[in-house]
Image (cartoon, rainbow, N blue to C red; front, side, top):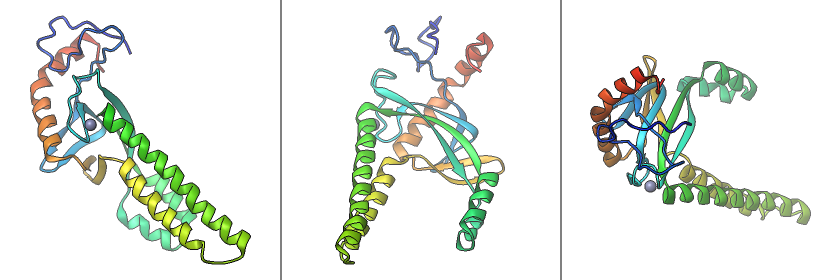
Length: 208
Ligand SMILES: [Zn+2]
């Protein structure tokens, strides 16, 4: 991404510090905060505030931008799971609604997420070894190891995922849950403060 120089850096609260190669101008866009939900369309760009701990990370220097595709499907479709998983998958792929989410995590939250994925992989290996031991020893008790690994996998996957997930979808809008009250308050303020900046940037042709 190019690094446009802000003509007047004081206008934009998101203006990055003047460090070559580190400048990423993020113009929060496509969302509003309603109650405890972040509401937006197919693309939601959240400000450079850590979505987990609300750390502003000196704007860009200590935060990492993350892009994630979130999906939503009407809960009734899950009933198909009881009949035919293949039919469920086909219907799921056809009917799912996609939201491109862009948000920030500070470096420490980022590494915590990576650590959780590492634990997830280790848990997977433990679960698999339970099955292998059960087969090799021809005894059922190592299945306990499998279930322990499975529960650990679910736990670490939940920890590594998020924090923002789709709560519901209606009238072509995604309602995201998982933002802490502090985070919602912080990003709500930012949108109000930057709306005029978005317009200016758009006229300059720098942002979409
Ligand atoms: Zn953080």
